[in-house]
Length: 177
Image 1: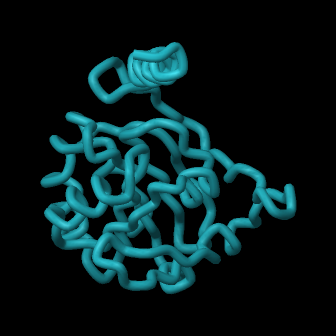
Image 2 (image 1 turned 180 degrees about the vertical axis):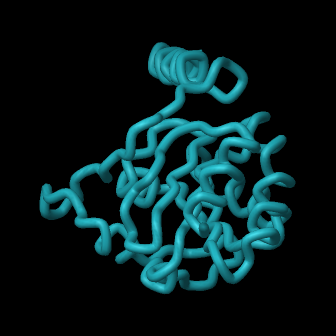
């Protein structure tokens, strides 16, 4: 093992240990704002947060603007994350429960595109985006899996961070009234 490989491996292990899916997840209780856009340095206004395009895990183009006008749950996952894998069925059930009232979108990242596509293709009931390059994660200021970003119908972030299943359902129920 070269020094470069050892250092890179050590950093990855440290990142997973600090932020990983098997430890105590961090929670966000205050609405967060998106990270500044890399090209302009400006933070996106609420309506602009959904102004993005991405590829789904099946290769189709996804236009985030189609999410405007109703609450949105973005679920940020990684294919190797045990917590994310445990949540997958629950998030699918949530998408089904609120179909037509809330848009639910999975955003896979923190791994190679092939791994994101392979795992994401096995998920059903709501769109899965291949964000191996981290563009959407960065846009929403997400740095750790499993995280949710919950937006109201106006596109304002109402919550960002980890939520257990019951708390996510409670927050979504509040948004739909």
